[in-house]
Image 1: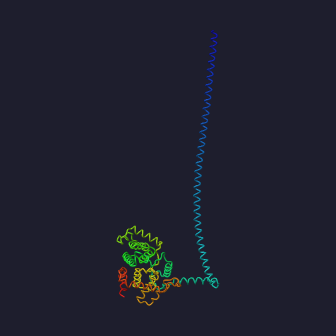
Image 2: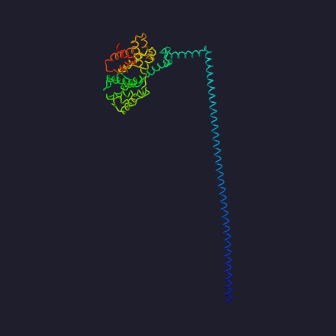
Length: 420
């Protein structure tokens, strides 16, 4: 039993020893494996860190390269801009030099051509050119030769352009304005008549004189009224509104210091409101197609009085006749140039000038003398209408023009005519 027990004990001891040894061996193996794994992980971490460092360094290098490339591109762009600017400057200089050279060459060529033309006057072509140019110049001189400007001594008068200006006035008069005034429009008006028109124009002459407006403003105002009434009917209550609005439009064209709309309303004794004036202005602009400028009789008369050497009293007499004729609706019947010639004719006859017959020369109111519509008969007919009105003006209530030209500044011409 003891031997068996000892044997069993020895066996058990041996087994326990072996198991312990095995356990120690397994522990050693595990430690070795752990160390190997730790070494592997440490190696991998090192590798990863080294790879990250390499990546970072490569990225930094790329960024540095990109910044360097950007800087290089910016430098190149600046250099290109500078080169382009220098090229443009050089080209502009070259162009200027070329233009100078070409202009000088042209001048030289022109001079040479002139010299050659002068030398080759015997050739037929040059003769033909010279004849054509001389005929054109003669035609132009005949068209614009109205006045003898050699007598003009006033430095402020542009004597070199008087003939051309007068010719252009006749051209503008021939073109006309749309719509044209019609002296028969009163037959189509239902609420106003010729007497009411004369009262309105007489009041406008007084207002015009008190404000100190230019002569052109008054003639344009009456022209706007006649043209509007030729195409549109108006009520009696809005007739004064038409007159004051026409005066405001004329002031916008001719005056430097333009009164306010409230001032025009105040003139009518506040019979109208500001909005009514604005609406009437819009209606006039629409009906007359925004065209108001035209050569008035006062423009033609200024050049005629200069040509006939009118003194101040002669000039004021003509202005008095023209402004008085605005009271009559027949004023719209005649052309502005005919009215001015008729006034010059009356002045020269009144002051007994021997050359009065020159005032109804066709060249002063017709561009094309072949036109049979106008003749000296029109001048004398217009002069009769003016004289008929002026002779009876003191018997009427239209005294604004009479008072205006009875003052010393206007040489008292209205009293002079009334007493003779």
